[in-house]
Structures are given as structure tokens and as C-alpha cells.
Length: 243
Image 1 (cartoon, helix red, strand yellow):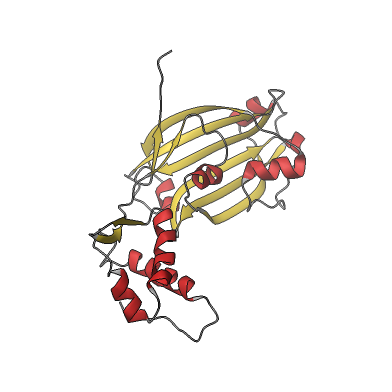
Image 2 (tube, rainbow, N blue to C red):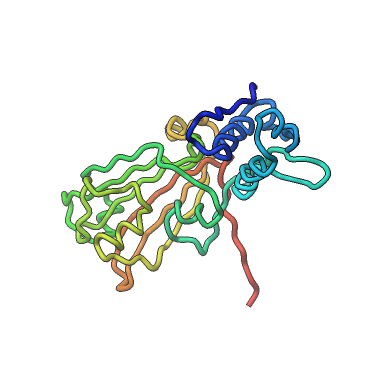
């Protein structure tokens, strides 16, 4: 790959270096753990100071993309599956943000649908009552990680036109004054089947299914949520203490 930045651009040099290094990280030459060019070599080839190089690499190291060892060099970090624990019931975006991982909405769709029997029982609403269904495909660096479907109790007032681009539970609290405090969850494993197409994997690849029943402080149902996670990009960790 050609190492080049534009010194005439208004974009700060360290930002240009960071963008260049992200391309290096993603390239076949380096993504399998090869060492990147040394700081002094990069600085000379790009015509910038070593501090500029260090400013970019510090950020990428903080994001977990690079590993640096004094006297040895800098290389691309091995990608590990994202993980969560039983004590994390809030939104996926917030879970990942705690770990310094940026996730994005690859696709979002909200619409009114007819609730199935499970949702009718959970929400305790009459048959035929429409509910809002939110479908989100979330990932990192363009790669899908999880596909979510959320259904909201009609009492809340959620409509398909609401802004679902922000973390879900933040939106519910800010716009509707709804505070979520508890969830019951069921976790299972299965083959991807038709879901594989959404997640960018084979139908025979394994996925993690996480079903969530969410409540407010009055123990009233708020949301029914089901998530389909790629097993190669996500693990569910459990920390059990003896009492």
C-alpha cells in the first residue's frame, strides 16, 4: 500500500495519519498480526513528526486496534469476540461503549405490526392491537454483529417516526419519561438458518439468541426484544460468586 498524506489539505495531519493507519490495519498485509512500519520510518515517509505518528497510534491503541511493545514494535491486535455479562441489561450500544468499542446502525426499520401470541400475553393487550416493531442490524466497521427486533407496549406512545438512531433506552427516557430497570432473559444457541443472510454468515454457522422481557419501576412491561448474535463476533460471559 502506498503511504501518502496530503500536506495541503485542511484536515489535521494526525487525522490523516490515523485514517491511513486504519487502512493499514484492515489490509491483508498487516491484519494477521504483522508489525507495522516503525514510528521513525512512518514519520520520514510521510514527512511528519514522530509526535504526529504517536498521536494517531495512541488513539488506535486505546480502541484496541493496535498492540505496542517497547523495543519490539507495533502490530495489529488480534480480533476477539465482543462480550457481555448477565448484569448488563441495557442497550447494546451502551454495553459496547463501556468497552471503548464503537458500533453503528447498518440498517433501521420501524413499522406497525400485528402482535403474536407471546407479545400479546407479555403486554396483556387485546388481539389485533398494533404494536411498533423496530428492526436494527448493528455492527462495527461495516461487519454485522447482531440483528435485533424490539416490540413496544402501546401504552408508551412509540411511533415508527421516532428517532431510533440514538441508544434505545436513552430515547425512551428522554422522550417518553420511561425508565427501564429490569429484564428477564432467555439465552439459547442455534444454527443461523435464514438469519445468516442478515448477519453475513452461512445458514449452518452458529448464532446466540438472546430473548429479553423489559420492565419499568412499576414492574409494567415496556419492551419485548430478541437479538440474534454472530457467535464468531460475540460471547456471553458469566461471573458467578459463591455466597
